[in-house]
Image (cartoon, rainbow, N blue to C red; front, side, top):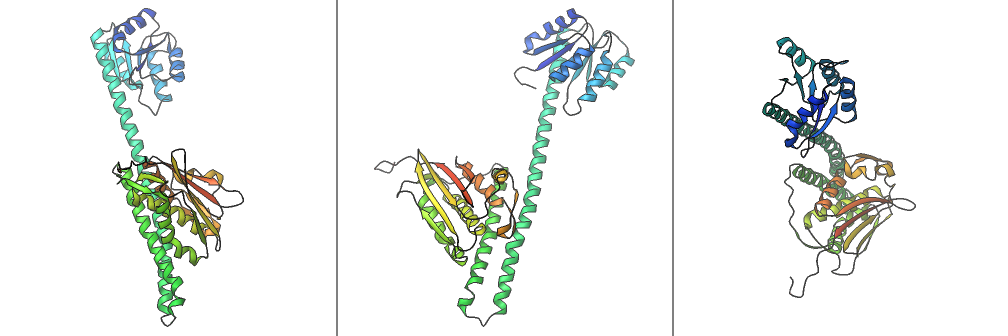
Amino acid sequence: MTTDSPLLLIVDDDATARQVAQAFLSREGYTFRHAAGGEAALSSVEEQEPDLILLDVMMPGIDGFEVCRLIRQRNTQAYLPIIMLTALDNPNEVAKGLDAGADDFITKPARRLELRARVRSMLRIRQQHMAIVQQANQLEELNNQREDLVRMVVHDLRSPVTAVQLAASALLANEAVARADTDGDLTLIKEEARRVGNYLEEILLLARKEEGRLSLSFSRVDLSELTRETIHALMPVAKARKQRIVLEPAPQGAAVILGDAALLRRVVDNLLTNGIKFSPPESLIEVRVSVQGGQVALDVLDEGPGVPEHMRKRIFEKYEIVKVRAAGGPQTGLGLAFSRTVVEAHGGYISCLPREGKGSQFHVTFIAAPTLNGDGS
């Protein structure tokens, strides 16, 4: 139903009666279509569903009752109001029409004010019905997303928690081992515990977004420096896998954006963590921060197995499960969904690009912050 101009289908074998009905309603701003009989009415509804039907009962061929019944059989999803027009003043005929699926009856000849009021009433009910259906669909989609989220969280939290337990058990069983021999276990415990905390924060942020309560604390953020700090924090994890992380920063002070530093740090952390996790030992992870055309870009390039072409958009759109054999099993897109939410909240864009040879390239762009004047304004 179009709010500006609802479409009314007038069905009557009498052309004069159709014109009179349209004339009575012409000031209401409706769009009209006419059908001179039952077959024409069914074809018209099939071609373009109207917002309301004014249907005469007594017509040659297929009468109004049968037309009404057939329309109801064919249109089981949307609510389509049907007002029947009849010259018969017979309660049995009214009951027959209601049984066929009519919503209202008007006795011919129709009175102008009554016809206008009944049409407005039926259109109002249709609009309310469509709004309820839309809300129900949205609620169902949200509920499905929440259920998917719970399943993913249970799956994702199980692996790091198990790793923490195994590492702790190894430490307890080797109390006499020198500290140098436990560094790897301690690093694993710290990293997996950090991952658990990150998952919980991402769940909270995504929930706030669904509820419309996501708020950002904006400040001027140097993306090169923020990336450098994040790499430094993750370096012990990369070293444990004998991986190298190489940063190619933008010129000093050039890669400044307006954003929430804490959330942006989490985005960089997610992309780097993915690069570390999915890349083999002794591999190289390249990180580039650049400025071009009023935009600041962050690129993270890894040497992992890559993301299949058909998944490169889906990993951001939904909480998809991506099977990556080299990483030891299926991995979900919770972190990438979180990253997409944060990036888009900053007016940016994130994508996954293929690399020549092997690996993936995650590309993020933001609008560069305005240059400050000498007085800092």
